Length: 178
Image 1: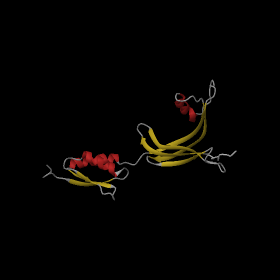
Image 2: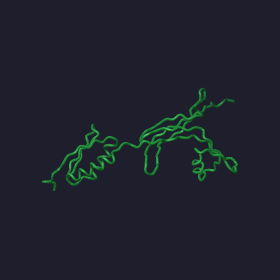
Image 3: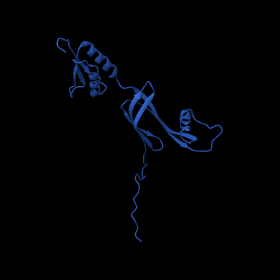
Image 4: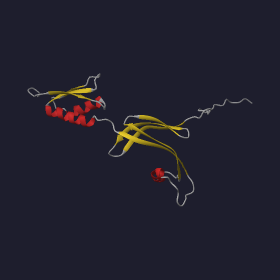
């Protein structure tokens, strides 16, 4: 069925995304005469097909293989507790949205900002931030949906940093003989 058809070849560099994912996109857009090659040592795929199919692959991959978005992320350490309700609780502007969001999920009534740090990251990037009061947070930006305003962190780990001289593991006590 491909005899007499004019086939063209284009090499598409893949700069930001997975070459394996790019081959899946190409395979889904190629016609019955089309094929692709993806040498393991090169971050590119070679596409061979009729011109209109190759152009579809080029458009799809060039719109998909873009730099990951840069985000500014603020990590805040907040102490929350249950206290008798106050008539007009004083809540700082930086905590106003947090307290309203958590009100329906928890019974916490008092919020206090302990520490806050901001950092710029890209999708797939990771960071270790030292917060005050002996805490640190490790996070990886797993996915970013800029249009929906959603950032997926996986993992997000809050750790307490042992102070000098502080024991970091539970002590094991030997049984005493009587």
